[in-house]
Image 1 (cartoon, rainbow, N blue to C red):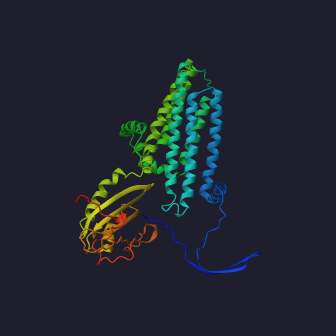
Image 2 (cartoon, rainbow, N blue to C red):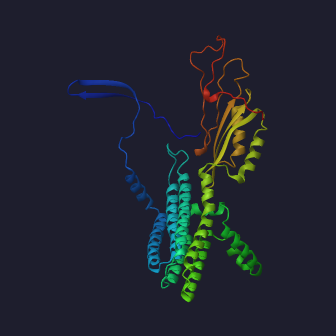
Length: 420
């Protein structure tokens, strides 16, 4: 697979070593340059990267809204304590998720400014996927906690004070919508577009289609589907509004835990498709919508003269919108490796952004002499370039005088495989 490691250049030098007891010693020869032994701690690296991040205008805007969301969450949690409302507590968990989404957005800005390194040859974009997965999973765990606490409240309904319930609902909705629409979150916007719709979105879309038949002007606002984060914000506010009127007019305190359970189920239904989508990316699965195109491209590439078969094809989503893959191509002894490599690359380049192709010749079983199969590649501009791999014959081996051929290396040993 592609790597960005580079061996250090050799340096010829002479070194004088002085010692009080042994006098002076002189050495000369070839040495390797070593990196500095001074390494920063994790906290020092975090402070350094944060200082660089604060110089960006987009990062400053995100930090301002992050402070606003944190302050709003603290105020809302305090009002949850004074009102003794479990439904308002479930709504405040939505603001905690907003804080996590802003941290993910800040991480996306940092990832865009980083370059691939020796440890992360594909870059740091996969950390962005992990951040989205972690945020959605924490939201799912929060919904389970709300359901557990609400079931206990159903047995012994607490007395809910409605003095700040309506104000807290309005304040929480304004804070939530401000975070959603004021900050452009690249990672979550991609997940919203690529993941499947939640059950709440599907039901609202069905109602919106019926409504747009009578009012066509609303189609731009309600279709094809509403943003799931804004939709769950309005749905939670509606549940809290119904709870407020039931408690304020009829003293129906059991409506509060039922509203909290409804909010938890809506949160779970909204976050689960996003968590499932990012989880499949982390598991390096091939996207289902591109399987047909990959099969078609590989079939077309296999028609080139000299290509015998493809082996160990693996294509996966590296990060949001980036597909990576590797494939081994077995060719005939008389085939042109560079021609095959260029042909396969041109076929797959439109679909796979990070591509590794290995070409090896079918020489072991048909040749009377030992010939090492060449793994060829074409140098390409940018990080998508291929690297050439060549394994030389074993040293001190007279392949013409020995009665038997030497055993090929394990990495290139041929195994029987079904014919293509």
